[in-house]
Amino acid sequence: MDPLSPRPLQPGQILARGVCRHLLSYDFVPVEEFSPERGKRVDIMALGPKGEIWVIECKSSRADFQTDAKWQGYLEWCDRYFWAVDAEFPTDLLPSGSGLIIADGYGAEILRMGEEDKLPAARRAAVIRKFARDAARRLHWLRDPQS
Image 1 (tube, rainbow, N blue to C red):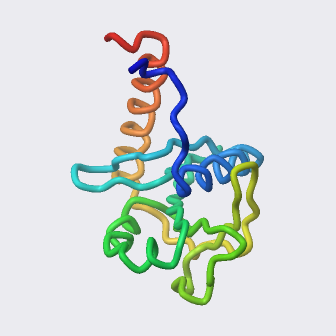
Image 2: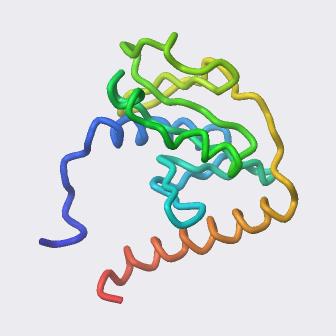
């Protein structure tokens, strides 16, 4: 299979596309399916113009949310944490204190900002370096998928 041929998007990936489009309007650059460390994979990590780091988890259904036992481990990797869900999602299930984004495949809206808990400087620097390297690696792969 050609690695550049489009594949149908899963429901969470459709939400992620809309969220990423919206984040760009805040001058945040997103990377989907980012791994801040071995064994962790966030749906979206976004880097802001002042070095802010946001993590956004996309949940396409109640069951998807209820089976996610890993999300609290992502809090130590960001300044703000958000849930992205569609308009039909029962938002009362989501923990208070975290941000809320309503999204579809074309856009999104931040309804509630996540509480800010600034990363320590050393952690921030390490995350930004990994973010940059992963983004550059992905860009290179698009140019040369055989490398």
